[in-house]
Length: 296
Image 1 (tube, rainbow, N blue to C red):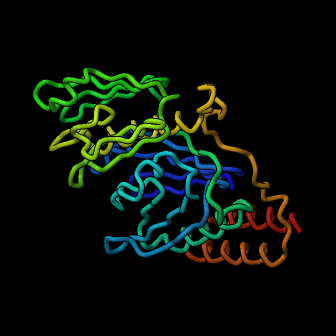
Image 2: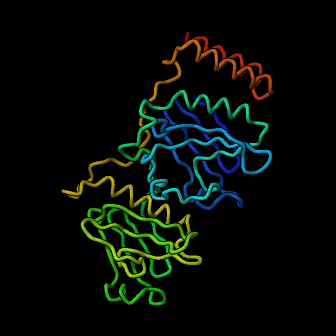
Image 3: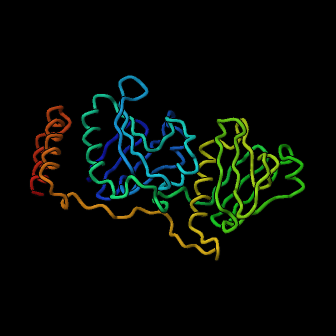
């Protein structure tokens, strides 16, 4: 697409096979966005695109809907992220609704053939190790190949003290359970292969528990996502990495490959609306219209 759409807290830069989401670092920007910095989302990682009124009056929201299993961050979050911290939402002033509708149409047109199916692998990258954060009962560290828990004498249970500090290689893990620190009994639990975990996270040496001011979302969720990405990339039988780190895949055709006259006519109609609304100059409208007509 080659265009940029700037909103509140983030800017979306559209390419032929992916959208690069750049997050602002303003005071009012969710701290999770500060940590993420920017994320490249392949179009094949998306299942749908939505446009709806924003939560605050005078705004609209363009939201890309990722396929299940395509993004380790959302897989780890398991639906627990608050709406304002959803990295797939672009909040715009209401007067830009026509422009947002145009981009929503553009995005829908480049969704992959398997958009309605769960992804078989991660397609969006997680934050890179090393990562660490302080929980209530210990410090968690991930260096890319192993997760370590070092207990705090002020918070760790006697069961954890007896077990001692812990170190788990990625090959030992089958998954990660993250319960938001903003909910009751928040924790991060490593699911070990062939091991049934104790019922309570504070008694499980493979878990750290959160609390007021500990394990904050912007610290513990990226950590969980990075571990989950590493776990998915390992063959449990050999312990060897079998899946390369998630990266954009150039699977979608460029605009020049699409020549459906009805589709092009609809795109030109959208351009006309943008031009009439003063969002495109005469030259921009003429250039983009010529590009579309050249596809016929």
